Image 1 (spheres, rainbow, N blue to C red):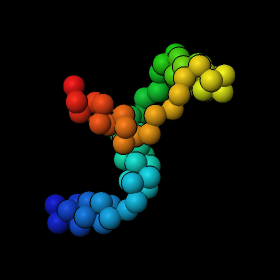
Image 2: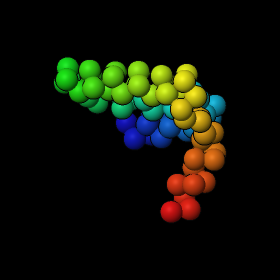
Image 3: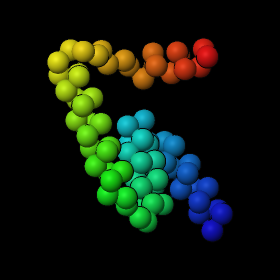
Image 4: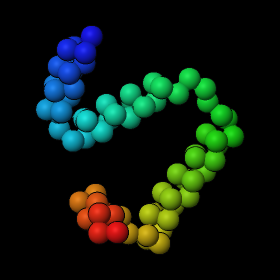
Length: 74
């Protein structure tokens, strides 16, 4: 099994970054068996608020490379 996992990881790391991110998200989602409806509702409200802020020009999106640099400087 470990050999298969290593091969799978090796192949996954060859994917473009967006595909790797989608795969990682799917894998993380697969670990969570239970859904808290109130938490889901809170996330949906937060996402809607953030999208509205973007649409209204209240916030400026930052490219990941720029955000990562700022995070690593801390």
